[in-house]
Amino acid sequence: MSDLSLRALHIALATVSDRHTPTSDDTGDWLADAIVDARHHMYQRQIIGTDKYVLRAVVSRWLAEPKLNVVLLNGSTGFAEHNCVPEAIMPLLDQTIDGFGELFRQLSWNDIGSSALQSRAFAGLANNKLVLAIPGSKSAAELAWRELIQPQLDSRQGPCNFVGRLLGKPS
Image 1 (cartoon, rainbow, N blue to C red):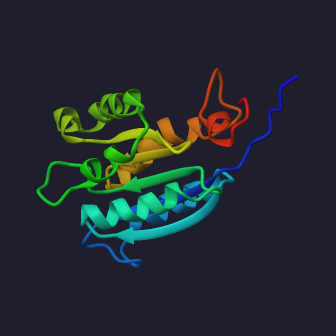
Image 2: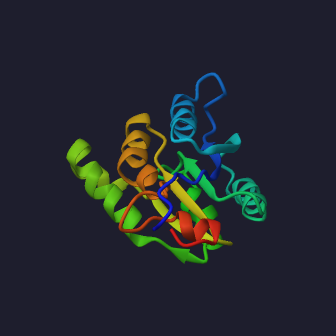
C-alpha cells in the first residue's frame, strides 16, 4: 500500500519587482500564506529587483541548496521592457515543463481573454528542484497556485505529481 500522507517541501519564494516592498507585496503575502496553509516549509522569502544578473545569482544560490525543493517566482514575466524572469532563469533549467505555461495561459483565457497570450509563465527542473515563474498579479498567482502548483506539490495528487521527483522517492 502506498503512503498517502502529505510530504512537506521546502519552498523559496521571490517577488521580482522594482516597486514592491515588504509592506506592499500583497501577491507575495498571499503566496507565502498559501505555502504554509498547504503545510509546506517557507525556506526563504525575498523581494528581488529586475536586474536579471542579480536575480540569476540569487536563484543559482537557491538551486545549490541541498535542502531546497522548489523555487517560486512571481512578477516580471510579461513583455514590459524591464521584465526579465524568463531571460534570467531559463538558462538555468535542465528541463522545461512546457505544459505549465500552456495550461496557465489556457486557464487565464477564461479570466482575461486574449491578454493571456502576454504571459510568459513557465516552469522547469534544475538540479532536481522545481522552478516556477508566474505573473505578479494576485489573481494570476491565485489561479496558478490553486489550479497548477498546489496540486503538483501535493504527494497525494494522482495519477502523478512532482513530489517524488523532488524528494528522490517515488510519489
